[in-house]
Amino acid sequence: MKKIAYTITTAFILAACSSEPTATRTTQTQDPLKDILVKKTTVVTPAQNTQPENPFFNQSSAPVSQTGFLANPNVQAFIQYQNQKNGLDINYLTNFFSQVNYRGNLINTMNRPATSTPWYKFKTGNSGAAKINPGRTFYQQNRSTINTAANRYGVPAELIVAILGIETNYGKNAGNVRTADSLATLAFDYPRRGALFQKELGEFLKMAQEENRDPFSFSGSFAGAMGMPQFMPSSFRQYAVDADGDGKRNIWSSKTDVAASVGNYMKQHGWQTGKPMIVPAAVQETAQIIKLTEENTALNYTVGQLRQMGVQPLQPVADNERALLYRLEVAPNQYDYFIGLNNFYTVWNYNHSRMYVTAVRDIANGLGGRL
Image (cartoon, rainbow, N blue to C red; front, side, top):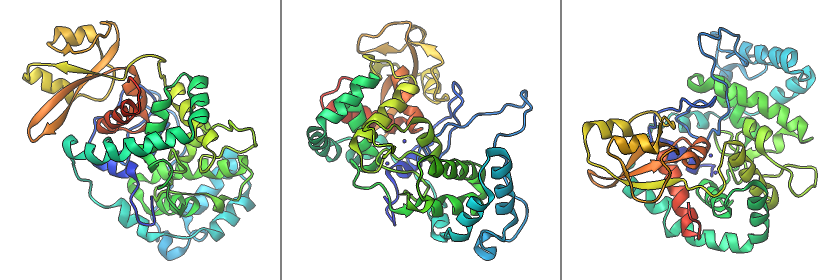
């Protein structure tokens, strides 16, 4: 779901490592950047024929790198939209764009080609001792806080720790780019994902007002993901929690707020208390089985239906559980097969990578979980 100034975020690396099929079950859209971009955007189908919630302002004009922000017609269209549709004050918006800095180096980072890394290489730095050992220390130091959040939301404490470990190395690499600069630059000078970043910029401006904070006081990754759990602004507004009662949803330094926010995100996305995420499976590598692993990441089958197709769970699991089949390359051209269940899908919503979800499970289990 997560350091910069020129460390590429874990979330970005994870997304680059995995070209995942997109989900079809929920209202969330896949973005190949990740989950850096923890997502919650409504998919509008042609049958609905409704006006987009947040139109993409991309008329032909000189780029903001030449015009500056306020003189750019796309920025002016954005200002008018945010004022008329979302009630943001014109002076607030104008003042923001008069102070925001263009960060062209971020465009180069976003344009770096994605590479594919097999699981047997990926897991070394993302789910082994390098994550588990500091995770034990982090959990020990914050056990009461994390356990409180886990109990409140019915989410395993080890899962919360694992998410923070894989996203930001337990808060050590949360990014130091001004969120205002990153989102504004990408919203108006990165057309490939301009609609997404314009939406997140609007969410960010509302977020800053709701939190009663200067928008230039926020920092995060080069793509606008913030804090220890690397929430995008839309996710912050929906899932961040003021658990310590100080009037602020502080996902940067309040371990209490951070743990509760991750727990809330997982619960709101359907985490089932006491249920596993992943079950190993035995299969005969037929064309049908391989095709199953290449389908969109969605819970399209039951375990019973997978059994009928030749998938044998290697741990007890009920036949009526919704499921998907996937495989990971454990050595060159050698694969292990897994059944992903509801809780697998919940974590997948945080970061659209099957390797990411498996790594989270492995870290959590390494900390004593049973996921």
